[in-house]
Image 1 (cartoon, rainbow, N blue to C red):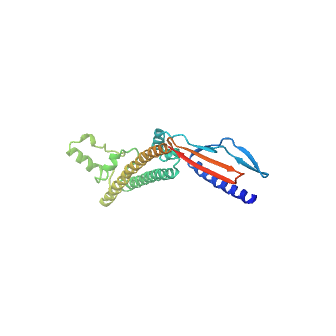
Image 2: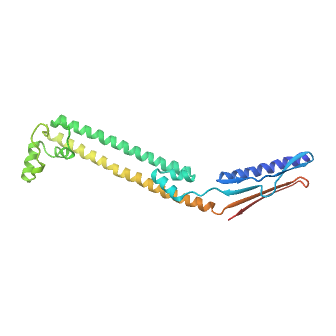
Image 3: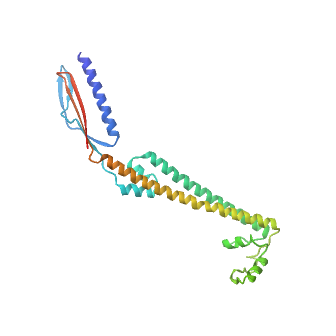
Length: 249
């Protein structure tokens, strides 16, 4: 009979420990007051004076810190609040966004080098130290002389290039000039994608910051004025076991 009671006692105790561990996993602090030992038929029991455990909610999270953490690095504010699934999502978006930006920048630089090399090969261009406008102009005129003549007719004297080996170009045929200009324009279109990528990255920062602020407020609201009392008493003489859980707001 005594062995059966012992088994029941340990079963109840196990259930009690599981309950406490589950509550503790939610972010509460456990305080255990001292108890007293009771001997019954040679078996030692723990007689606890209520409450056996007093559970109090953890400290509140700073809403402003959560906001600015995620504004600085998406997902950091969510990690501060303890919501790591959100952290993984926003941080993944951040990494993907910057990965796309770097890949796009590398593609633009590669294409720029390609069409400049093409102009050097088919128009005799000296590619050293040229401004962006020069690369636009050589795609619109077959040679530097036609270009300068057009600028003189328009009385745009400041846009005229000095006719020397540094500024010189003459396309070997019309089709190559059109191909070059098409490649240059297409490269600029690819470069404009970076505006949307940067916009998406900034948006990810803002959304994560707002989300972290929301989570911090929800966390603080959930623990505000929250306390738990768990009472456990074992009475060996009557072979009775009492467990009560009281939640107050």
